[in-house]
Image (cartoon, rainbow, N blue to C red; front, side, top):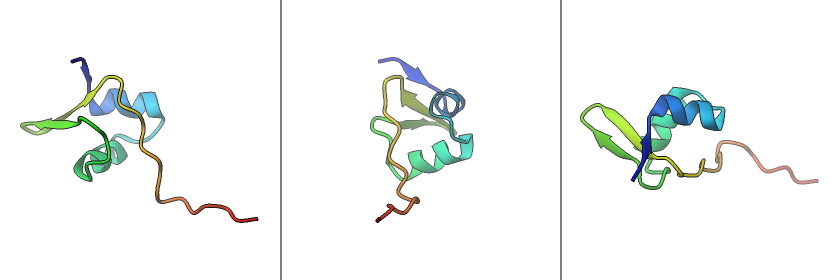
Length: 58
């Protein structure tokens, strides 16, 4: 399986590296694994929904 780094995922998804790390710690990225001190993320993993945003009710 091909993997990308936190930096590559942050650039791909348009979010900060720190946010990607938090998502990894929260097990919100399928297949993400920690090798020593580095997170590796499957190349084709999808960006999780941002649950911090409130839904808009009109």
